[in-house]
Image (tube, rainbow, N blue to C red; front, side):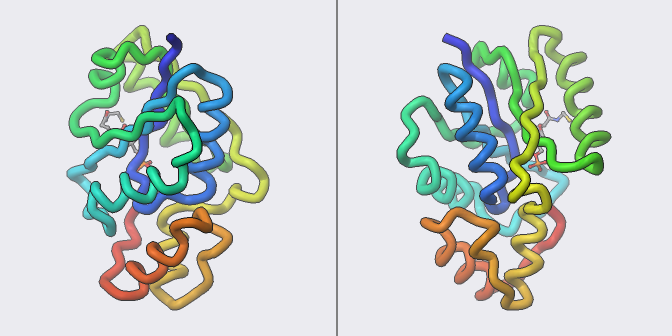
Length: 166
Ligand code: PNS
């Protein structure tokens, strides 16, 4: 079975993330969505909330597993016999950071490929930080996050302190 990993912070998940994960699930037999704890960033949403949002938005897809992860992606991929990491590329601005991560992962696990799916045109500018920023000013985030979790994300972001860093 060809298993790939879609890793991320998903703080919170956006329509852009969901588009890439759904396309990966159509292309590969199994997709592991790995929600990483990044000790360098203070997330806005807990790991449980981030997993809950992903579960809601991907409930109709069978070949997806959603997990919480800590440590190196390259090690986790080896542990799960995953052959590739699938990531979305929005614009040129993503490229340097993503290329650096792809090369690092390849060095740590030479068997692991990184595959980039180009972002859909409508999600080209969507990011978790845009969602948090717009919501913190009371703006409309309906076009940025999956409809089924929009209210929960909006209420949570409008209700409390917002970290714009991820
Ligand atoms: O959504 P993000 O914040 O861009 O996702 C970044 C993520 C989680 C994919 C990246 O930070 C990661 O792979 N973290 C795991 C730790 C690791 O393997 N670091 C070395 C590779 S750069």
